[in-house]
Image (cartoon, rainbow, N blue to C red):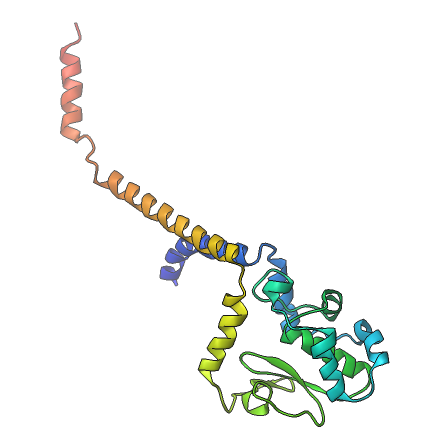
Length: 225
């Protein structure tokens, strides 16, 4: 524990820089964590959409994906790498990722009294409902979270996960944010190296010896008239 406390200040500045570069407003990250723990399904926010749609969950899902919530990652919608919005925010934004689509679809199904459950894999979150057809990303074998319960997925393709996460977090990250992130880390590194060299130089510079100081004092006394 003492060792961890010794090295933690060394990482405090770069970690703070990474946080503020990715989340200029850290409250967005705090809100996302809270919403991920308790997804804000809100039937009231989608009441107008629910009223115009039939009681066909497959058709409702198709409308959500193609009409109500076109796909966009958080970099494109909110300017951050990951954001878990409220249903009202998704309706106002008019686009979003799988979390945004899940919230709208679940909210509409809840408004219409159609049973559903939330499921999630390592890379995706979706809504399951009676009669839903499984696909490459949405099937029980990939589910890490099913009906609110954690479980080990039966199947996981790490190469597919890598491609998904790379596209989601890195490929869509604005170039100026990449330059800001790594440019700042480089300056922090250079500053740290310079500071350590200065400390080493000071430590290696010899100071006046006690004997020389005593000799100087004696010499001064001898020169007093």
